[in-house]
Length: 162
Image (tube, rainbow, N blue to C red; front, top):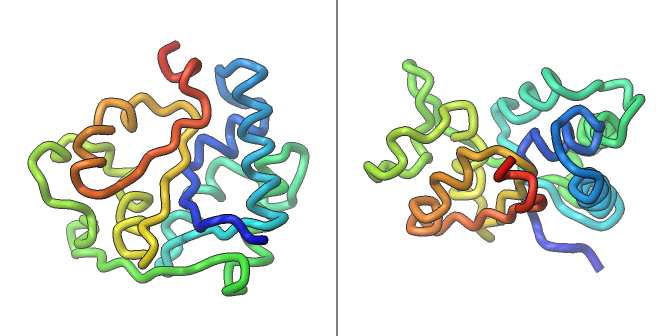
């Protein structure tokens, strides 16, 4: 049975590649999560390719040597297969802002590089959760994101506080 659709922050792949300052339990949790997605999950990406491009800056398309890299290869091979991935369109203004990102004042200081993850969760019909490994910015904005209907799943809550 396929699992629900999810949005994956880039730091999950980085942690799965042992390239982040996280504990062993966090690394294993990220590895497990990426494996689950490739076996029976469903990934949500933007049709504009912004999330793919960010993954590509941090993960190796060859699929080696780490699990995050293998995930990158899987995305490359499956992103256009609706069984595994959904590509949602985003509207990008000339100034680079994403129209679909929530406009509430409490998110004014949200990291611009992470807005694309929020926007795809907003646009997707199922409002999938965003899974995050260690970025503190997600923690700072957790309540504001929840108020906007965005669910954040922290895979490594013990490591975020480091």
